Length: 254
Image (cartoon, rainbow, N blue to C red; front, side, top):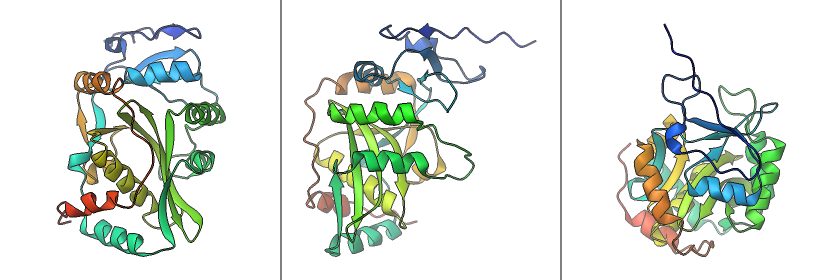
């Protein structure tokens, strides 16, 4: 006999989040689901991310809040610079028509992520209320876009949430081969220079694992977030010199 699923806490706007230990477990219908309801205003999102919680829901669903265990993260020291990616970056860096920019086209980046078609997915979780929420978070200085530009065109990129020195990767898109990988490489290079140790990846995917991401426990993750959110935030600006330290590291043989 299967036990009944635990009840899901339902939040009114402004309510505090329940303890992370209340999140549904591996035998429940939606492991990692913590609560429903609430709001997507800047302060609620700041509070959520400061505790390792993020919103994730599809069109027609209520706001759903998640705190999975384990949690997929990329420790920037573990970033795998594959031989093919190193060659791509070297070519990109040497081309004067190519550059990485931060925060010059946030709305375009999140809209592109929302409309990207991914294998095995029939829709997107970046629904219009989420787009508006993260645009507002960007205006508050708590969300950033990392953009790959080629010949004056936005070729790919990603966006992330950043509170203090805690960085939470959200979504990426590409219109040219490897453009999203270039953006992720730039974020990694930036974090290394700023002494930011970890980027949250939320969900386990083969693509992220191939680049060095791995799972850690929710307790370990939340402890690191708690230590990082109160640290002074970096200046979100990319300098080409940041590539040097990334390329100085070892090349993955694959």
